Length: 258
Image (cartoon, rainbow, N blue to C red):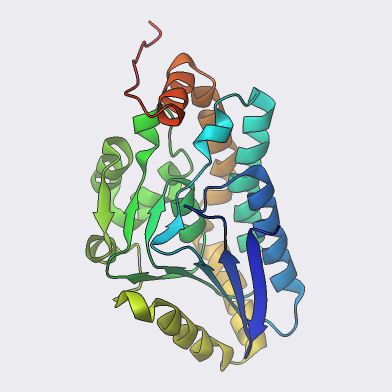
């Protein structure tokens, strides 16, 4: 059964996450998502891409931590290379604008997915966060771009406290473009997409390519380092304990290496 839905209507390709209960990301799901982005890139009927969720009150909870509990290092690396490298390259080469429609919770890898898009529309009850530190791992890919968006000190706080924050704060920080009523998230994203569909498509594609090159600022070059950081921490004693504690629904017992 597919966890990624794909349809095109009036020039808008809608890629929908559908992996209840929380859209947790597995290697298979990330691979399928990237394939959908490649499909949209080649689909002449698709002018703009909207990524959303079919699961109520959830955009994406991030990595399936329970699945990581017994994963071998090479399996963890394969998943991170897909989520970090594969996703960023697919978005970079998309050739068309992408919009994240966030109606619900976005955490960890869900933030990676949302922020990979060119624009974000959020519902009033949407919430965001980087909780990786609480399970002994790190949101390493966000070390590169988040300080550029929200500033160094705010980025450090969000990344290392792991606290959640709402859509109004996300808007104030510059992480989302607009905040709308929860029931209007998809309508608003489609309206924004329709505005772009009406633009001259060659100019839009060339402009997006130039924009992506101008704003990259070493972002893609930093992805490989982010993969390495996450993998090293994930297989550490703390990483293994944090993931195990999460899966077993208990408080982790941190024993750091000296």
